[in-house]
Every structure is written in C-alpha cells, then in structure tokens.
Length: 217
Image (cartoon, rainbow, N blue to C red; front, side, top):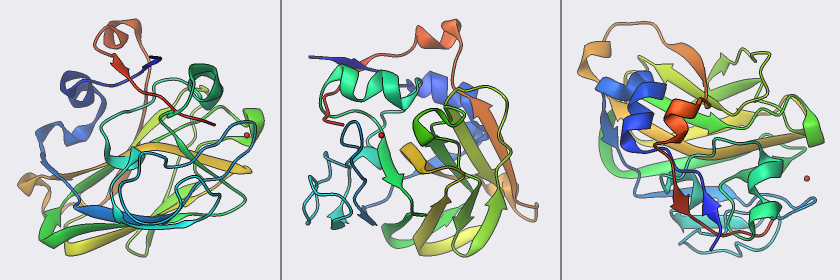
C-alpha cells in the first residue's frame, strides 16, 4: 500500500488558528466531482450517490476526500499518480467549484481552514485567487513558495446548518485536499481575516503518515 501524508492532530494545532476551536464536523457535502488530466483527480472515497469515477458528476449525500482528515503536504504531482489510486486531492479544471457542506442541524462556525495546493502554476495548478464562504468573498495572498497552503478564515460568526464554499481559481486548476470547521466563542465581534500557512517543515513531517490509495493534470 502506498503511503500518503496525514497531519496528526498535533500538527494541525501548529498550522492553524483553529487550535483553540472545537471541531465542527459536517454530516455530508455535495459537489461536482473533480476532473481528469494526467491523472484522475476525483473524490473517489465519496460515500454518497453519484458516479465518483466520472468527471464533473453530481455527488450528493456523502462524505469523502475533503473531510477524511488526510491533508496533503506535497504538491499534486508528487502525491497523485506516482503513489497510485486514492490520492489526497480533489482537482477541478477551468471552473470555480462550489461545495455545499451540511451539518444536520444549526451549528456555530467561527473558523474554516481550506488545505489547497500551490505549485506556482506548474501543471496549471495554483493557489485559489479567493475563497467565497456563504456569499462573502475573501481574497487569498499567494506566497512565493510553491508549497501547499492552509488557508484559515477566522472570526466568521456563522450560525447555520449549511455552508457553501467556492474555490475561485487563479490558474487552470484548483486542488483541495481537506476543509475543516471550528467553533471558537472568543472570536465574537471580530473581523474575518484569512491567513495562509505553508504546509512544510521537517519537524512536522515527523508527525505525518497514513496509508491511502488513488487514480489520478
């Protein structure tokens, strides 16, 4: 079985301002499946209905790669096809995909972290230009490094049963490996601010390691 990178709970605490937040877990999410290129960037661990091995297929009622706890710490070309089926990313080409997250009841969400690839345009893959959360758009500052990013949006103060997130592409492709949600009561009355963190460092890589498999710009 091929090894895939997984940030442990300890690593996540180091990477994100969600460290002080309780995790809020979706019950399901709906999306249009990823696309194929050099490899297949589908949400092929998806548990709901729809053809998870077809480009752009409507998937609904389940959970999959975007909420499985597996966070990519390497670029798409290193962790998709070269490591076999079931890579960590869902990748979309020439579209700004929207994922509809459902929580089953009204929840309070103060912070959202999107784990996205940023290969500085290699293979047409870049960090998102912005992220839209329930109709509010947040621009993303793309650092010079070509490392995957943890994009954290704090102080959102959302009270809702559903959250729609749109990944607005900068290049041909946008790749996302995970989306996580947090509740932090200390964030009330603050202004939402996105923050980007590079997912690298030998000290943190020692915390990583889980097996996954995938087919794959």
